[in-house]
Length: 313
Image 1 (cartoon, rainbow, N blue to C red):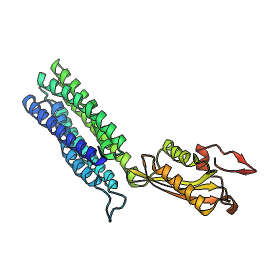
Image 2 (image 1 turned 90 degrees about the vertical axis):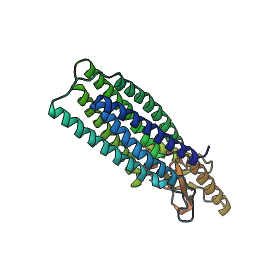
Image 3 (image 1 turned 45 degrees about the vertical axis):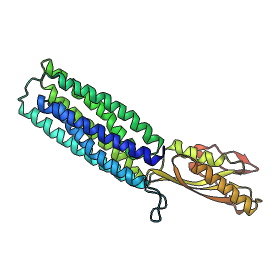
Image 4 (image 1 turned 180 degrees about the vertical axis):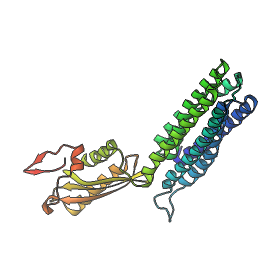
C-alpha cells in the first residue's frame, strides 16, 4: 500500500475512533455527572476535531508533486501538527477551568457508576491500540502528524487511567478524587501539547537531525570505496524530511566521468536513507588543497593519517 493511501486510511480511522469515544463518554458523563468522565469527553471532542484537521492535512500532504511543488507537499505536515497542538491546549484549558471551579466550590457529590468505570477502561484499551498503531505507521512513513497523534494517544492512556482512579476513589468514599483526577487529565493534555509543539517547531525552523542520523548520513557517503573523506556536511530539516549537502574528497587523477559517477553514487546512497529527501554532493580533488579537517565530521569518524595528510575518514 502506498504512503498516500496508508496515511489517509489512518486519518479516517482516527476520526471514527475519536468520534465514537466522544459520543460514548458524553452519554456517560451526562448520566453520571462525573467531572473526570466529562474531562475525558472534552479531550475526545478535541481529538475528534483535530482528527478532521489531520484527515484534511494528510490529504494535502500526500498529493503527488506538481509544477508549483516539485518536492511534493509533505512540508505542510508540521503545520497540521501545530493545529493538533492548538486543539490540545484548548482542551486542557477547558478541563482545568471545569475541575478548578468544582474544587473551589467544594460541593462534590459522591459518585458510584459502573458505566463510568467501563467507559474509562474501554478508553484505555482503545487509546493504547491507537498509540501503537499510529506510532508504527508514523515512523514507517515519516509522518510527523501521525507521530504527534501517537504521542497524544499515549498520554490519553495515562489521563484515562488517572480519571479511572478518580472515579473509583469517588465510589469508595472520596468524592474529591473525581475533580482532582480531572485536573490530572488536564495537565497530561497540556504536556502532550508542549511535546507536539517542540517536535514540529524543529521541522519548521530547519533544525539539524539527531546525531545518530547525521552519523548515518556521513558514514553512508564514506562507504563509497573512492571517497577518502568528507567535510562541510550540512543536514537540516525541510518540513519532516532532511536535505543534505556535503563535500567528498577523492584522488585528483580521476577523470571527469569518474568524478561524476562517484558523485552520483554518493547522492543515490544518501537519498536512499528513508529520512532524506535531497542530497547535494560536491567532489573535491586532492590537488586543489580543499581536503581539510572538519570538527563536526571528526565527532563521528576518527581521522586517520594518509601519506602525511589528515583527512576525515
